[in-house]
Length: 300
Ligand SMILES: NC(=O)c1ccc[n+]([C@@H]2O[C@H](COP(=O)([O-])OP(=O)(O)OC[C@H]3O[C@@H](n4cnc5c(N)ncnc54)[C@H](OP(=O)(O)O)[C@@H]3O)[C@@H](O)[C@H]2O)c1
Image (cartoon, rainbow, N blue to C red; front, top):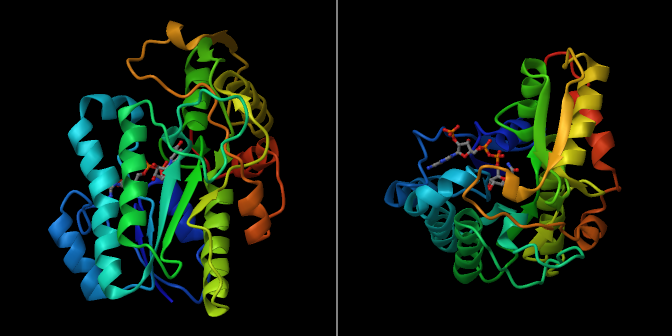
């Protein structure tokens, strides 16, 4: 199977490459070779390659900057997936688009189901929700549209919350972290595994002429505030030697944090249906976090 991976240099992209099965021919262009902002070139690239699948892990992911660079975020996160879907509607392959809990407003206090209407409250969430909409519009059948939402991604490399907290704790005696936003921390390692399972299951469903759900939710189990998450990161950092001293972590409210972006207060995704379909065992985010950082090659 020929799979085009976009966003191969990102924290998730790198884990997708590492965990790629042997029978997959994975093509991993850099942003220079495949720029989602250059829709004409992307369209031609996909038509020429004619992949069986595209995994789109490429995105404008800086939530703060998306408020200021709204147009660019929209181009990459909404018009990028749109052009991928348009090209695949001609060439016939399938798309797996990585999306986010930030397509929801976070104003309910129970987990969001896959069939709930999106309701973004910031520019990043809006651009990602539009991307989802375009994909469903241009790839309406044959199990071609696959939107996989996840939340609070961290992993052994890249620009993520866990590595940032460890670095801050190594540099400072105290840090302040928000406790009134809640979601499910998820490791890139476990998400990459879920991605390969979804592709497999979708192919199996297609062979049996069965409908595979367009929207899937995958996160590690359990929930946390950023504060709880940071406290566990400190615990694991000390245990694994990645943190040298136990600095203080002070809980603060969102309105005490200097940010111009509104973020969902409770964006937990309901993952039960997806995990049942793809046959993945439950695993708490703390266990996944420990597995992820129990690795001597990590540099803080
Ligand atoms: N991080 C989270 O907490 C989180 C939560 C929920 C969902 N997600 C979603 O998960 C996916 C992966 O996120 P991540 O955390 O791995 O992000 P990341 O580490 O920021 O990586 C983003 C990737 O997108 C690429 N990219 C950026 N602009 C591009 C463009 N114009 N054309 C082509 N590629 C471009 C980057 O390339 P360069 O290396 O060249 O910049 C990088 O490879 C994204 O769809 C994101 O929306 C993330």
